[in-house]
Length: 286
Image (cartoon, rainbow, N blue to C red):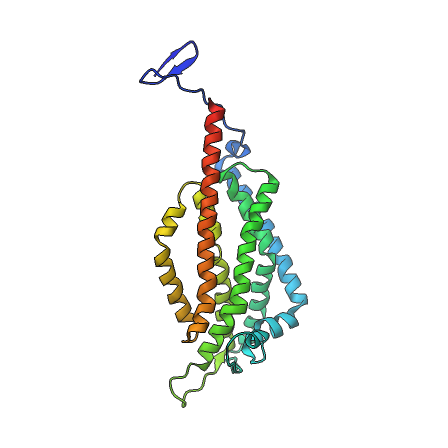
């Protein structure tokens, strides 16, 4: 490469456009320790939001425990009136001395974490986003709300759809009549929390597809190629978690399939945005 009169020439002699310096990013001047310090404060601020959520959950503890956590254990749970399920009451017992104590505080902590999750997710995303692109605070806020929306949507789906099906399936699954189903309260709480939070994570598929596509690591064509694999995986999950009837399985599988299809749509949008941004950056460099 040679330079003549301040103009750079490539190997083939063509004039190369002079690239403009990127916009100033304040994170470029931060050392590794500065990044760790910022992460520490972001986590602390997020934990303050979780603590606020736990305090709110403590004030509404009777409603949360009796109606929210123990609701699916009763046959009169309102979702059983909507779903095609012949519900029965669960027999819950506490096999360990501190069993109900741990369930009580575990319920408040998990519920408080869900309540405070918007603040925690915002703080973590505000730390991560500058590594992907330079954005304004309002953009960071909107992106965090985008993540929160799908997380809370997954939590809602898990609690209102998955938990009732799973609870009743395992309650009514009997090998022989000589064996009675009596569930430990800790196992019940752990299962309900795991199913609910797992759906919150699964519903991040559109979010993950959008941001991976935005940085060029995923394309809608790739997701379409593996659509059949996704359908099989969804049907297997639905068959495992629901009673062995097609109506129950479809009520779980169909929303997840729509979620995957929506993720393909978001991947398409992200790829267009990335292509447009690259074109604009090239025009500015000319």
